Image 1: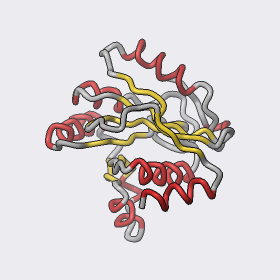
Image 2: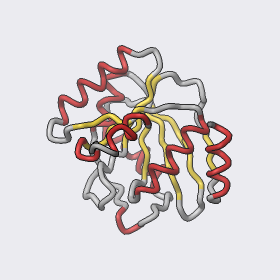
Image 3: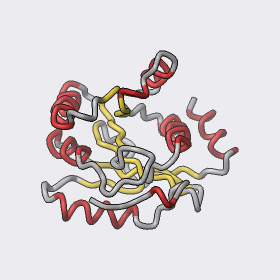
Image 4: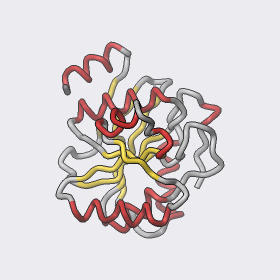
Length: 182
C-alpha cells in the first residue's frame, strides 16, 4: 500500500517528506491547515506512505450508515465535541493502554475559518507525556509531511508560539479559511 500511495501522491504532483524520526511509538500529530476534504485524502495517502496508521478524531455526525464503516477503517474515532474534557481524559487513557499509538488531530476542528484553534491536542500530549508532531499540507508548494516535533512544556503560550511560527508560511487549499490563532 505504501508504494501505491506514493505513486498516487506523485501523480497528483505532491512531494511528501518528514524531518521527524520515524521510530516514535506514540505521538499527537496535528495537521494544519485544514480547509478542504482533500486534506484528509492527501494526508491519508501520506500516512499510508509513512506506514503510520493514526487514529483520527472526527465529529460523530460524520459517521453515517455509509461513511461510518469507511471512516472507522481509516482510523476514525467518533467524538462528541460537546464534552471536550472527557475527550482529553479518554484519549490520554488510549496512550497508556497501547504500546504504539499515533493520534491525528486538526486543531482548527473544522474546515471553516475559526477565530482560534482548539487546545485539546496540547493537553492530550501533555497528559500522555508524548510529543506533538507538526503535520502539514502546503497547497502552494504542493508539499506536505511531518515538519517538526515539540515536547510540550506545560507553558501553552510559549509552545504555541513555536507552533504558530512553523505554520505561518503554510498555504491552505482555501487560504481565506485558515486562521492561526490560539
